[in-house]
Amino acid sequence: MAEERLDVDPAAALRELGGLLVTVAERYSDGRVGALLDEAELTDVTPARDREVLRLVAVAGLTAVGAALLSMSGLPEGAMGPAIAAVGLCAVALVYRRRALKMLEILPVPFGNGGQQ
Image (cartoon, rainbow, N blue to C red):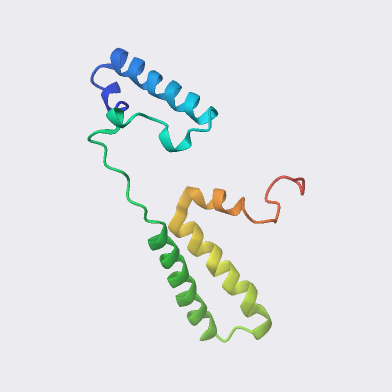
């Protein structure tokens, strides 16, 4: 809500947003992760919906449909595993879009850094 006020009253909203960010940073550094802001600052705030389960179901469903289509395609059995893996990666990219690269960071395979960890 403080960020939305930047369009209406930039000077006051910037001071308010800066103060909130400093409070969050101080409390986080103190280890107070469960209380980054006071209750009074959180009134009239609706939490964002967590759609992670829906995204995972979508990835699994798309991968299953792709695997079924691949099994009907007459692809040799030795190529089926890598093809299904490719379909799974495409499903992740389709569902997660830009966040897909962040998800790949959890894999133990180096991507784009020359093999250095």
